[in-house]
Structure formats: C-alpha cells, structure tokens
Length: 518
Image (cartoon, rainbow, N blue to C red; front, side, top):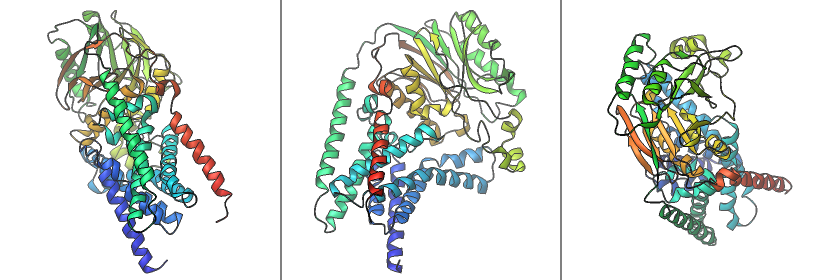
C-alpha cells in the first residue's frame, strides 16, 4: 500500500468513526434520531472503498469503538462513582467499547467480501442482511449490552417503532442499514460512477415511510377508554446505592419503605411492585420478606419484591423477585436469567488479579458469584393475569420478554436498580428499552426502579404514568385489566424471523461467494 492510499484509508476510518459517533447521539439522552439514518453511511463508504477486507474490518472496528464510546461514556462515570481510579475507569470504558466493536468489524469484513461481486443495486440490501444477521445472532448467543441494536436510535419516534410488533427490533435496524448503505452508494454516484443508487435509496425511503404510516395507523387504534382498571403501586425509594449494603443503613432503608407504603391511598392496590434487591439482606426463597408480608396482609394486596435470595443446597445466592400473596405467604419466585459480567459474577475469575477483586469488586467477592435462573420459569399469577418479570438489564434483550409473551404472559414487570449510574445516560437508555419490549409483544410493562425511572407503559409504548429519575415517591397508577392483543404480536408468536432469515441468507451468500474465483 502506498503512502497516499494509507492516508486515504485513515481518512475513511476517521470519517466512519465520526459518523458512528454521531449515530450514537441518537440514543437517550441526546435523542438526535436523524443521525441514525445517516451516521453509518461513512462506514459503508469506507468499507466499499477499502483496498482489502482487512481494511474494511478496521474501519468497522473504529466506527464501532466510536459509537460505543459515545453511547456508553457513562461507564466511566459509574466506575468513578465506585472510586475506581481515573486511569482504570478509562481502561474499562475503552475495553468495553473495543469488545463491542468486534461485531461491527465482523459486519464490515463480511459485507465487504460479499458486495465485491454482483449488481450494485443489491449492495445496500446485502449490507442490511449481513448487519441484521450478525446483530441477531449475537443477540441470541452472547451476553451484550445491546445498545447497538439500531432500532434504539429511533426511541423517540413512537409511530416508527410500532413496527417492532411484527418485525422485532431488527426490522427497523434493517431499514436503517439499507438507507445508510444506499446513501454511501449515492455518494459514489456523485463522484462519477454510473447512477445506480437511486433505486435502492428510493425503495428504502418508501419502506421507511410505509413503516411510519403503519405505526400511525396502529396508534390510531389505541382506545381512548381502556375499560376496567386495577390499581398498581410502584415504589421508588431513591436509596443511595453506595450506602445500600452498609449494614448500619438497614433500618433506615426499611423505614423508608414503611413511609412510602403508609402514604394515603385513594384506591386499594391490587399489586405493589418494589424495585430490584429492595430488601438489603439475604432472604430465604420460601419465606416472605417480613416487611413485604406485613404490608401484603395490611393492604390485602400482592407484593412483588426484589430480594437477594439466600443460597440453598446445590444453588448459590441469586438476584430474584419474590411474589408475596395477600396472606403473607410466598406465591412464587423468579431468579434473574441474564447476569451482569463484573456486576453479578466475575468471568474467568481465576484469571483476574486478586488485588482487582479485593479493591474494586469487594461486595461481589463477599457475596460470591450469583447463580442464574432457568430460561422458562413459572409465570406469576396476578390480578392482571399471567405476569412475567425481568430484572435490571434483562430488559435490554428482546429474547426474554418475547419468550415470556409467547408462553402466555399478559404483563411484564421490569424491576431494576439504576442507582449505580446516578444522573447519567445509563438510566435513560435502560428505561427506553422497556418501551420497545411493550410494543414488540403488545403487553403492558410496569417498571419499578430504586432511583427510577419508574413507569407504566401500555402495549402501544405510550407511557401512561411516570416517576422521574432520582425522585423519591410512590407511583399510584390505574392499569387496564383488559387485553387488547389476546393473540399477542406476530413477533411474540414467530420470534426473530427476520434475524433468522437474514442469517440464512448471509450463510448462502457466503457459500456462493466462496465458490467464485477472485
């Protein structure tokens, strides 16, 4: 490679990274959704013009790194809140961004390889299929933060994201990649190539417009009168997470819950939802948390409370939700399925230096790695019918809510504790994922967070009641008892059909390409 071509490659990589960083600004809190439609075009242009597939992969890596560095900059702040030194915090932030960028490098490598032959008209479609295939596959099989699910860039376009009900989160991502890749082709046309990008770009824009019109029609079907309702009380205690596990704060924490629950009621609740790990000590799985049992009997209402389930023979401690019935007994338990690396367990613990664990993972070290629950746990029976639970960042993964909706869940409850992140972008990104889960499965979502954001989200993704981040209070909301989508959504019934289709197509394209002589 000549010096000039090296400079050009670096310029293209910088442009790809800059565009991806702008795309990252589409997510909460910034919310510049337009960048989601144009920010990845420089990446596809860089990959198209790269001298080698390796060069395309490099452009993909730096674009992915820039995107995740912008979206997850709050990881650095969280580390600093935990008193991790600035250099180590920066290293964690950079390492996570680099690890998540590998997906983008793989997509750029495969896309570059598959688009070097065939009609230019098909290139944007190939890029969209490859990107969707890799996003879906890694979403199924690897523990990711999932912030590069491109549909999340359109979180504030309620009509547009209605498409999740029949295509899941990957349909909108497919359209975003199609249009970005078509824009890259249009740029090539403007530099003297035969104009061939107009057709895929026009078709992509038409599909996006059709998707938006579909969403407008779906929202128009939302009834003004939802019918009979039942009261839900959602507790948001706003406990300082960095004091929560101080043994001396237990009485203060429990007293805070007593105060919230003792506030006047205008209507008796059918369900009271507590946040993740609300009880600040180990709780036996089969015995109701005493404070929850007391209030369940007093209010004659079921309480869903977040606990740290104590270890039992053959199973370790777990992040769990306990349903306490109105008589104060346990009606069921849910154990979190998707654990947070370095938050709830230490991957490859034997390889992590002991001083790192003792200094920065002390609480986790004392508790030991948490155990995860099985994929299909019994649904809770509540006044709203079969009810599923996700805990914390499980909400970022479409597969869990979809799996539960397919098994008959009529409501989804997300219990979380975003107190670790304080007032950063993290809690907002985490909250908005629940809007997607409601739309994708056409079920209401109730969310209770220690520091928020707590809310009720209806099956159209409309937030009908909300308690803002870091506000302390009890959110009393009337939730419809009826089920406007008894058959659930196409996505809930058929799963990630688009991701599976794109994966199969990508495998076929790779096999075909391998048979073609360079």
